Length: 243
Image 1 (tube, helix red, strand yellow):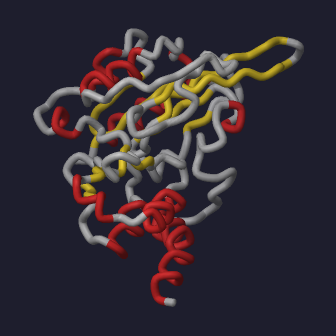
Image 2 (cartoon, rainbow, N blue to C red):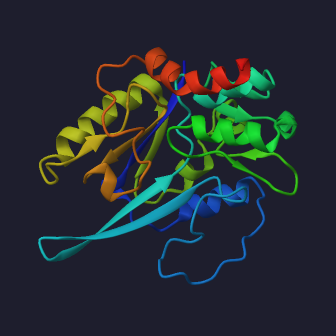
């Protein structure tokens, strides 16, 4: 049975415990950073940060509002990155059907720079990054080795406020709907992000565009099925390969 995250931003305090725990568990090196005008640091996802708490502020009714968004791979139900990756190098990107995790393997060094860009552009959330030193493609792994042993992903394990939950996909969907009904009483704009399409579901208290450009796959997916949506993403890349 696939697993899923529920990330409830109404409970997120931007402590960045999840971001730090992710780096420590995966033994990722530090980034050289500097003050660039935001508490968000580093400025973006990179090969050494699979998870990044994004900070966004905007003025609403003369009040400054802060929105926090723990960004990571969404582990799509039908992952476009794998569909595109398989065109060039089959099974370098793996979809674990048992847990739902989408994994970039060590074989991803086989992708050329151009091929990697096509993999990255296929992602509706702008997640994949490439390590310029090793050539490996990098992103959240869902802590799949922990999950397969019955443990929580390390980011969920350390979250002090219950903003991050993890479990059976159906259970997380039910919890998401329950939390949404509760949160809407205080935040009428609250929404769930692409719950039918991904295994990392966000509960937002504000409009998605007030969190991050890629908080949702697109402004409106309409009645598209997963396969139709994926086909729309993959079509131009498949055409390029056949040309």
